[in-house]
Image (cartoon, rainbow, N blue to C red; front, side, top):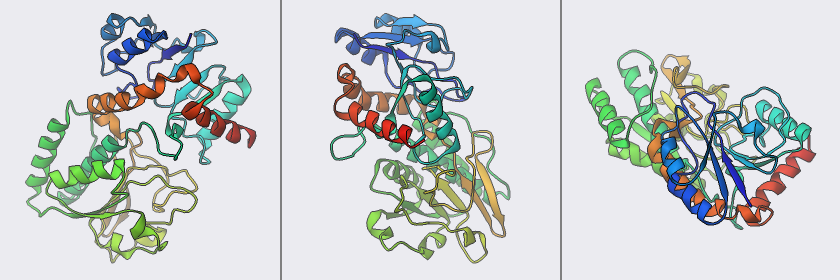
Length: 351
């Protein structure tokens, strides 16, 4: 019997979850055992999981879960260095040379557990089977526009917080942009044909922003790309790899550009493949942007849990995409799960 243990998220401001109560009910009907940890922050109430037939466990009790349980979360585990003995499903951010990712892999090596990274659950053609991308792009474009509006007021973007719905986000943002009295900026979105870029483009268009949409064809030359600097707002929506060119080189901080806001939705500053070379650390809800130049200003938004700003929409969307894949956990060595395990083994052997 598959035992799926849904842990509470430990990261601040993280209210998402990867399975709904209805999804838990379907897994239980299929013969799975489902345990859900209590959480004071999760956007979906624990009572609904109990009503669906899930067992309820205390928050943070997953280290004591039965050895055969598969621990399922979204964001990172507490970085306490303890060996990891279970099989874990989560976004590990461990395969691109990130220091925290290497530490995570060592914990799996030391404990004998395994990582099934949600980012690498793919079909036979390499396409991801479930992703938060649309809402990451949507929310990332919104915060980037807030940063632009703050510049028009002569300041810098202040703290952000989650919105109860996308409608509430749009209404608030439209009023903030209108209050500047300035024409909407012109924006460029790279990766516009993907999930992330579609979300960013949809939000920008809804706000009356003119959007230049680029994808692989427009960046195939390898750069440089002066067109990016000729827009006021750039939203990076691509998943970088070894062949990804630098979209914004270090010298882009110099004067002579229209660009004043970069929304790096991909947000992988510690990766060797980062195509935005003007910053070196992620931002957060308390400080959404880093100012990397002053004359004219250049602010970088690089929040790495953007979909959490719209927790209900993003959780329901993602859980719906992922449920068919979770139903295959009784064949965890086959197809998408087997491919994810193989990638983990490759990186573990390279430690």
